[in-house]
Length: 123
Image (cartoon, rainbow, N blue to C red; front, side, top):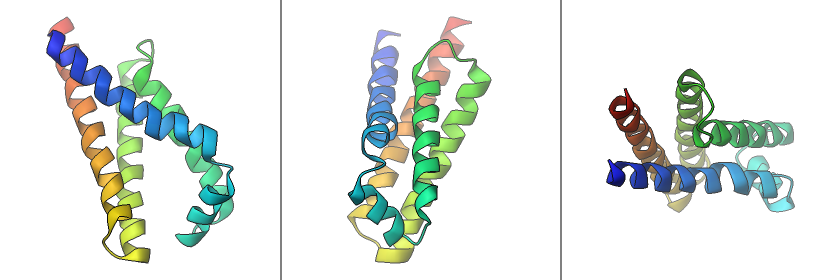
């Protein structure tokens, strides 16, 4: 049980840092805006994406949110990461920018798996 909690909080913390905190702090930087333009998306999409990433990562991190919200947040973050990889592959070919979101998808998947393990053990 203790190992499961450590894995859950470690993976969830990583997701919170990279999907919540970083977009909140950097989404309006010129580098972030250029990245969105480079992929062919309008600038407002970057702002909307940052808001959704921050909200989703908060929902999966804060224990007081209902599990139904957490399920939707995991789904939304997962879809976002898959489409980030697809966008990078379509524009730049298969490279590090394509792999990076897939690595975080794996971390998110582990967080999701251990979220369910902990909730099953608590019932």
